[in-house]
Image (cartoon, rainbow, N blue to C red; front, side, top):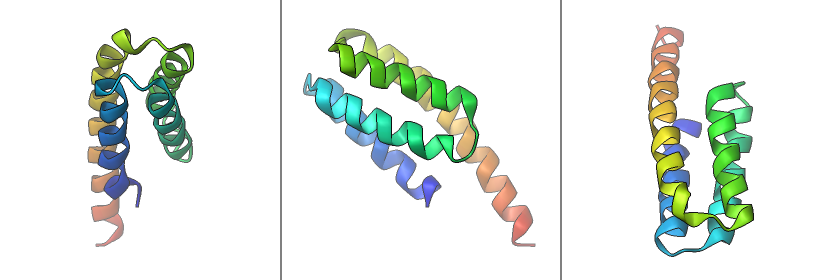
Length: 90
């Protein structure tokens, strides 16, 4: 489920940034942070937390750069998860 919903979180975070809506940014980053926290993905958790904090503080202008970092981390995480799932299905 996480793999499928990951892109939805990113889309909504991007909408918050594009719409200059700190509330959406904070809420969606918080939700994503909780989701990655279930997997003990510390690096992704911390990146989502930084985005959540930027939303909380209304600092939208620096959020795009932080989102780029988070996307890279999530890409690696999702790739690793897919490998594990393939191994489990053998």
